[in-house]
Image (cartoon, rainbow, N blue to C red; front, side):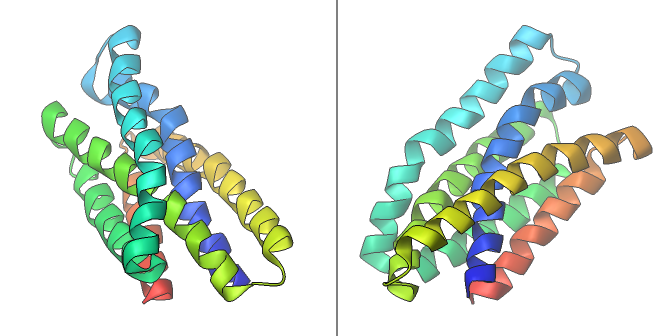
Length: 173
């Protein structure tokens, strides 16, 4: 189960941090926005995830972390796959705003489950899971950038992220 928690947090926190560090590049390269405007669009999306993290904990306490995470991962899979289609700027921004919000909700929900599954190892498991999230945050922008450079498209990176969300959904189901 600890491995699954690592996957869940690598997708939620790693996805959030990875996208947060990459969205300015994405908006600049994909939509030819100035660097300042691209940074503003990225900030808008990051705000969604930042403010919704405590909401994720609340929703997990109310409805259960499993249910919340299943919805998060399915939503992330659909939204990231939609970005592979290179939608218009307004659609991409909306998808990323909602997607980052879902990732923030997922961050809160993961840690609602840890003490339920590991009541006597909360400290060590949260440390390991937190490290997995950090690794996810490193790999996502590396993969997005590498695939963009190799294929001249962001589609492959977003499809891989969508696949990660689908795998996490299967793991929580």
